[in-house]
Image 1 (tube, helix red, strand yellow):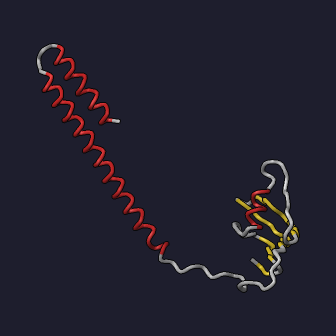
Image 2 (cartoon, rainbow, N blue to C red):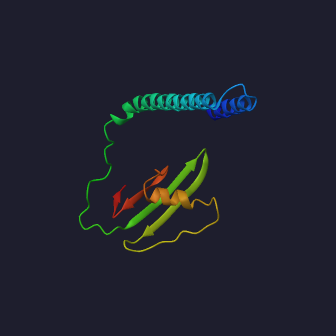
Image 3 (spheres, helix red, strand yellow):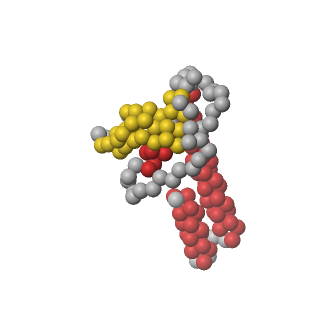
Length: 148
């Protein structure tokens, strides 16, 4: 924001001085070129600052990237899997408030399911638990009889 204002100020002052006859056209062009150079250097300085911040952020992520992957809780591939999903007495709490309580759901493999309800009724939490994006606080989620 400051550098474009600098350019505008230089051109305004040089234009007024040119109109008053105090400077020539060549000096006006030289002043505008120096202002353009300052704007370019300011952009370069900003880019170098962003590069330094990016490098610091990458260094802070290094311990996370070197962690060993978490072990899978399942038993590996299930032979003859059909995609039968089952939720048994699933409960989810957030900030001490029950979002889902005692949910029992069976979805046979190869079928579709629509969950409808008003806003805030727990549809998103149910989908997150079914896809194991969210761990249930109580109960279990099974796929073809294997706990996820």
